[in-house]
Length: 145
Length: 149
Image 1 (cartoon, helix red, strand yellow):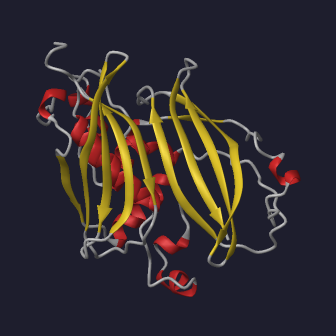
Image 2: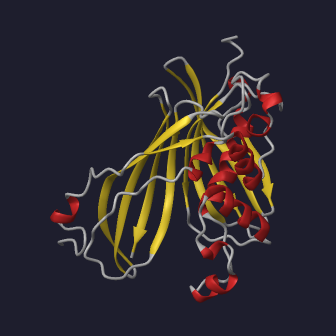
């Protein structure tokens, strides 16, 4: 298991990630199989082109999965991802790297839990945020040990 | 201005629920999902390592619920042809989903509204899906927004 981050280690502005992802058409095929989303725009180039797309595009849900990966890595084994939100604003295509990042926007205690709100996003190689989102994570506290 | 598609009659569909479906969470399915999103976290990949963790065994990654498709309530709108978009999702995680769990998935139409878009009226539908384990514990609540235009 990776090193654990504690509530006391983060401040507003603390950066999360980056987590680099290099999606390929093979990954889209794997994701289609694992998730059961077989919409052809994600693996059939001719179908995608016929639908006015520039080629096959990433499943929104796969990008949601990348942001989930970013946040479960941040939370660590003793933390817990409590909320995750994503919005699909732009398309991403295989062969182009996407980077998942975030930063802490708020830290507070509620009902005995140590919580951290985060602004998160996926950006493409032009620095455009194609998939903005938000997350709330419960972190362990050194004080509570 | 009166809505073109989301009429008072159409709004009566809010609250409509789908038939529940129950899935058994297989360890291999968790591993394949983690591999598909490229997440090597031992909690999602290695029973041997996950047993040493505070969870005592493998759990599912947060968006694994995507693989347990809900029946979606059928939304009737007088919209002869339309394009659809996935607007995004919000997830709440209340308890872990574990390998071996039996998860019952049910979805409900919780909002239906219309807004003016550049290309004409756009219809937003919000579907709330709950994932409940075999002990009646709600593990995950998902709210997804669909857009028709």
